[in-house]
Length: 72
Image 1: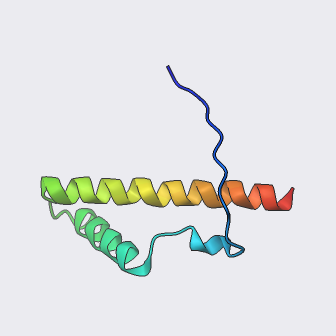
Image 2: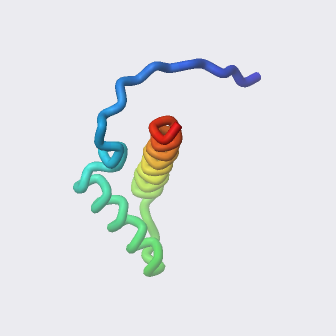
């Protein structure tokens, strides 16, 4: 069973702040590039990449929702 909860957050004026830090984005890109080139990732690397993709998607969704709220 799922539940809905309301969370109040202070949102920075700069919505671009909702993204992966540069170093983390670079690491994700390295892993994805290796995978795209057919180089197998270890189980740990696969889990790392999967987690980073999920985090990046979460930030994107959060940024989009914040933009909607700001625009009214």
